[in-house]
Image 1 (cartoon, rainbow, N blue to C red):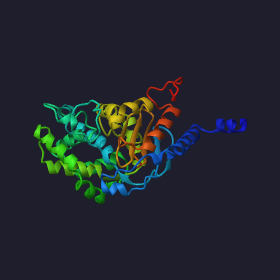
Image 2 (cartoon, rainbow, N blue to C red):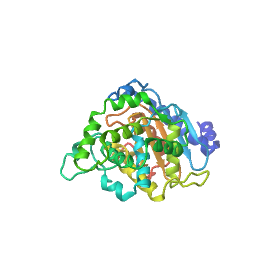
Image 3 (spheres, rainbow, N blue to C red):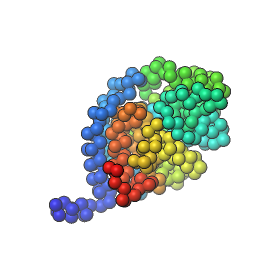
Image 4 (cartoon, one colour):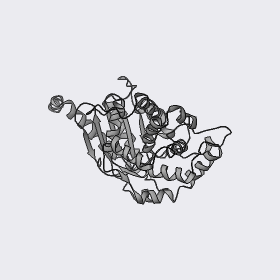
Length: 326
């Protein structure tokens, strides 16, 4: 035992981080059978649920990637973060928050409940109704290909493209999102053509990314919107702050509160199995694990992030005396 401890003490900090992540990956794999892939989008139902990958990209130090970190998958709702960044930059915060609030919804990501009240609007931009309202504003200012080009830049991944099979599968089965869009239109929260808005929104969700792509994006957010290597500012400091705040409070749908307690870092999930996480001033993290829990979040991905967040002390609310089993 002493020899093992001595060898661990001799490891560099980067090597210790790799040991922690590797151990967390092994633990996370054990709970994959408890989740299911998203079958309500037929094309996503064909994905192998046993895949799991992670990329952690610190502001200083080497990028750490394990498992299926370079496997392409559709970004789905993680694209809401990118759309929100662009909307804040192009349209401004005032216009954005005239269309959507900034509060947790407490409802499922595709819920219509909160909209079916007089004078109501989407709770936040990171649920479907809020993101569709944001898409309605973006289509007035930019094309989808403008957003695609921006996504390639902010994710430092020129290979990102739309997955046509997933797009066709998703747009042909989007009755619920279409209902949300028409309800928004009836309230005056959508003033663009509904079909144009839904096509834009669905194409955003259908972009193919990797866990590494998401880690690159997370790293820019962790660095206050600045690309570390060049010093180029990709977004204003205000935009970075708003986005990270909403990710922390609303990014994991109606599981956001529990995630904030257990993991304690801003994150955004997608039903394609992606997780984007930000350790402010420290690292960007991307995870891919397509088996989902009942709330639509990666079941292994959450377990993985919880373990590494607390063991690496990334949790914003880290307490060394806190017992995880309490």
